[in-house]
Image 1: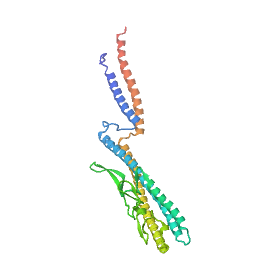
Image 2: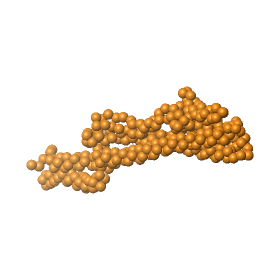
Image 3: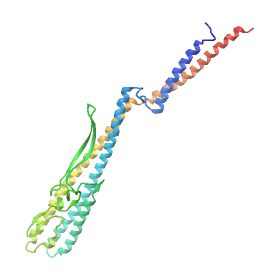
Image 4: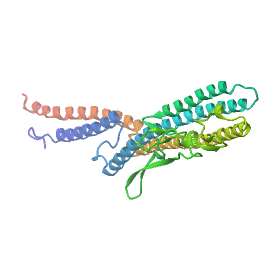
Length: 311
């Protein structure tokens, strides 16, 4: 039946065009955003997983920053410890030189005094972000090392602990007074050893000009032993700092790899296949043009009725 009130062909063509336009909007959204799951309405399960993993990745990014900060603290401490070792080596060389008869020990002591001041300067300046790992109060120092989400969904931050010890064979050049100040009577360089006739002596207070001639040989040997023991302790402390620096570096690499893996996993869930979407968009554009033509034909079909009324 032909009717001028109801154009079924035009309605069908219009419905087809609306469907194509809707599909084109979805495809264009995926092409412009690069996501096939951009909102929860696209796929609630995938969107929820992706949102959670993205938040975890942001936490891992913060962990990377914290690892970088911790690594900088350790590197600063290691550099200071290495410099201090070189200074103590110089003190050792001066002590050995002073054992020779006829040497002006007062002149050598002047050099030792300068080296001792340099050790204090190194210890005081080895601070990064307000923390000094080679001088000051003993105790544990922590570095953020990871962010973990367990099977129950609970999250936690993992830390690596490094214990600072101010004993003579520990890893602090100088200890602290408990109030945040450096104390020069403790630590590797501040802890004293008993010397024959002259009392207690540390690397920081070593003075070869006070030795009596009668005990000179004994005192010089004790001085050499004192400095050598300090060198051994400092070398051990530097090795510990080096090992924790290596661990931080390994953790940084792992967190970086983990972040990339999570990004890749999220991409598999929500990213659009641009090859597929571009092909679909091209096909929909063609369908849209055909649908418009079909609608145009359907709309003009009713005009043929006019020929029935022509004379």
